[in-house]
Length: 379
Ligand SMILES: CC(=O)SCCNC(=O)CCNC(=O)[C@H](O)C(C)(C)COP(=O)(O)OP(=O)(O)OC[C@H]1O[C@@H](n2cnc3c(N)ncnc32)[C@H](O)[C@@H]1OP(=O)(O)O
Ligand SMILES: O=C(O)CCC(=O)C(=O)O
Image: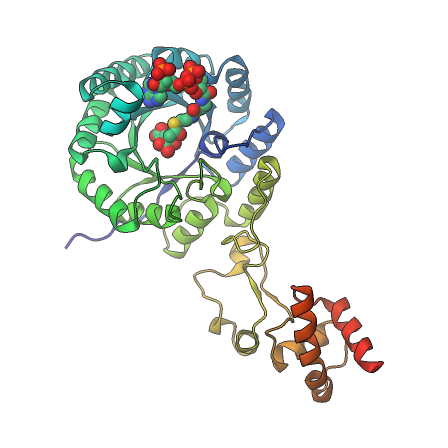
């Protein structure tokens, strides 16, 4: 039986390209520079810097950002058009990515061309760019609605023209993990190139689909910080990196830098991180419910998995007192706040805390607990 893929995977970041394509998101050059440096610092090996065809400002910015990178490869995204190649060549990078529509719907619907045109133009574009000394990856846009035979065909064209990698894009985010796995597993034996998977999150499946693609053999995974990206976004770097670490598959990503990256991108994009966002959300390592806190106090492994220790991400777990606290959790919270926590106090305070939390809709900090106790003492 064929074993599921294991071993290292390469995460390819597209926060500054697909991430910035999010409606309403626009980074300044200073923000892009900070993000690119932080991505490189966190160990990303490839960073898509933008779309050269957008014009002179974008070209100048890509040039400037690329010149800054020391280890990560700067990548410029292109359409299958000669003018995009010219624009990309002006960016001073050696890595290009060219996207070819792969579904009949996209070939006919937006380019008004057939499969032969795409094959021919792809061969010519990649051939010209590789002869000019560029390393070129090829993206099959809308691969999830394409004929797998045509995808294999395109990958063959790309390989013969000198491409270094073939990317499958679930452009509309319509795959589920089973479909993503089948697509990659079905294609890989027919490809002469390493395979990258680029997910979108329209059904909330981006990370799961990316994981499925990796398990089926994709060696490169497209990600963005906080899952920023078109519509519902892309696969989140922090989620993919965390799950790969849990599976023991090396990515080279410094997991303790993901929160800082997330915060940086949240501020630059104007898209705050939800408190329950996996890995980087403020509350994802916070416990309130009495049974959980009691269990954690006795043995952390009862409600925390060795697969996801907060310390791995430079974080710590937090135990708080709130509506769902039990005596054990409340006792600990009071002790931490330096407040009396004898049994009589706990039993009087608990119902008052429940009422308070229902009114305030949050957990109680040390000051809140002290205030509640003072109010009870005055009764
Ligand atoms: C799934 C994705 O993420 S695809 C990437 C999306 N990213 C972007 O769109 C980046 C930002 N885009 C832009 O700044 C602009 O759209 C530009 C500079 C790329 C092009 O601008 P314009 O020349 O004004 O074209 P416009 O945006 O109106 O239309 C897109 C054109 O690209 C063509 N096109 C789209 N994809 C491809 C492709 N893979 N290869 C070749 N041509 C393509 C379309 O057919 C259309 O050309 P047409 O007007 O001749 O029919
Ligand atoms: O160019 C590619 O490979 C993919 C483009 C893209 O972002 C997408 O199809 O979602």
